[in-house]
Length: 586
Image (cartoon, rainbow, N blue to C red; front, side, top):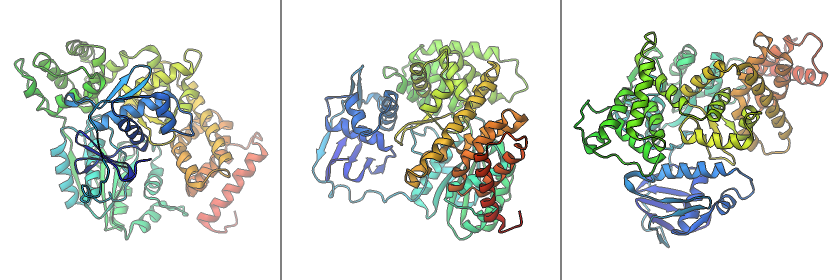
């Protein structure tokens, strides 16, 4: 990035190119490198049109990327700046041509005198960059932070979609700035096998395990360290998570743990914070806009609606309807966000009417928890408002357990009824509607579902009768990616190779489970196991590699195993046995 010794001022922000830094007042702003490069390109030519091709050439100088990548990064930049909030505008879209920075800009020649008091570099952590502000959770964050300072295990408990992860990450970010501990996030959502919980924790903290007993290795590694672990999404493997937590806390006095789950871990010394819904206004037709906006649920709706449609504003006429929407959605953050994204297609009163219809249709589901009924209603309703192609893309992509690239999305979802152009546009639309999240920090964007949305979409996949076909496609795609990774190992720098391919691990596990369960496709499972060996080995997942290789060999006694694959499997098994058990006779 060019611009040595410059400080660029606009609104409340300070951009210092030499330091690769964006600050809001004296507070650092987390922003991806691509979005920051786009911001600099726009502010350098404030008031002038910067074309899409020019931006792509600057931000991805040696890489061809789809236009959707640029759109996603500009959208993330707008969210970071709060573009449109309170009527303040920074970036204007010139349809079909590019973007223009419309806020007044001041460029100073030397930043040394004005920013000596900038906060110190944040401590080591792997927390994601927040895409939006955390609204209405100040009291909860303060309470959880206080609990974390007094206890070594705190669990944030609440209903699906209520905002547990958002609050936990906000607390973790504050702790990363103020305490001596490093902070490490462990996302357990993709982990479907309870036995792999120690592996997930080890990977997050940078532990290389050369032992069959990963739990013991974890205890030894953490024994003398000061660390905050954030264990996110524990509910589906809660027993295994609780055992790991118990082992770690017993062995490592300097480790603290903040967990999120739909239920408590029930571990010794655990403090539980039950996250309430966002506060909603009382039922009143006389509620004015200023009064409604004081409630966090309404504030969230307004911010997300404004991000979707810049012209939207809360006024005295629509405030009662917005308040009613928030009440009917029980203050559940995910449900409110999904409702707000439809403001570009419907008036507030129409959204409320559609929501009323959907709620009445679900009144008979008495066997489900109350708040889950509201979330299910919101997801049903949001799904019904999608185009047919968007629905198809949504359910087909739900087969991915973790993050996936545009190319993998095309390999799975593109079919006779959907071409690549349809899929690219549909993917961008699902991101815009908050049904997919995107990580645009690398050379190419990667996508993933919220856990609740993925579960809902998987149900739709089963109802459409496409599950088996898509599972097979998913396994074939993982085989292609694993083979590509195997071929690239000797031609790419190791850190770059690992960074690109380790994200495939959760989906490889899912594909292997499908292939071997009920013998869906043993040849694919065996071939994928052989192709994935370099990934397990270079991520030091020796125990997992041994177990998978033994399973593949056990299922291939019919003579169908290719000699080359058998040689790789037996070599990997011998290596794994040597590292985990020593030179045993086997």
